[in-house]
Image 1 (cartoon, helix red, strand yellow):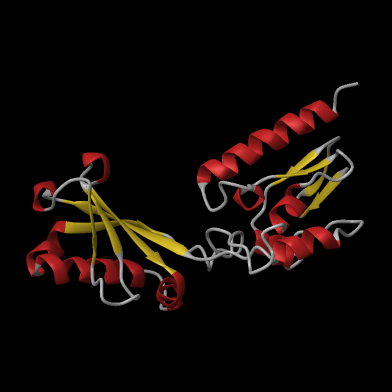
Image 2 (image 1 turned 30 degrees about the vertical axis):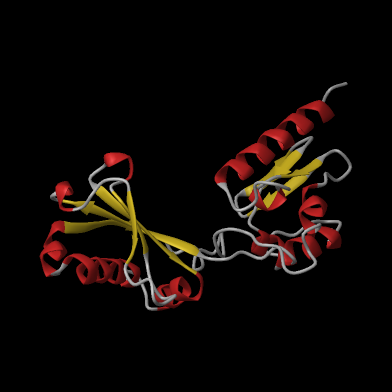
Length: 206
């Protein structure tokens, strides 16, 4: 088997494919001969969006450790805050769905600004100077991702098994979208990767 890239061709006896479903469904990663069943399966497992913002706290005791809150529980355009996870001096902010996509569309820094404004709405203006942005994600805008976690469209739950099935015991697939029970999780991706690796190694035995 051969993988053609801009830096040259890589040859292998077996290959494990672990790519986001939009990359497969759109043909950004092309197979020759074509694998229409894999593309159809990937199309039935599109990615949702769950972005994160990480904030550093100058005065950690301003907020209680290991606490969850919403900046505004009355609306969907809100942030879910994990205050001081593992008692660290930081805050992890979750932004999802159409709201996260809209923030990405506003450009870098928009999600972080929203996250800080949400804290100010809960704790008052004094907290603004006490928090500093560490990082924010933009998974929808990432050309190598196109989103965060897979979800099965109605009637397409079986697509996970189709996507995970090996081809000629030489081409193997892994990733959270392939997991029958732990999709949309990091451990689901990890477990499918281990299973694909074991199957690939077994296929190489004489």
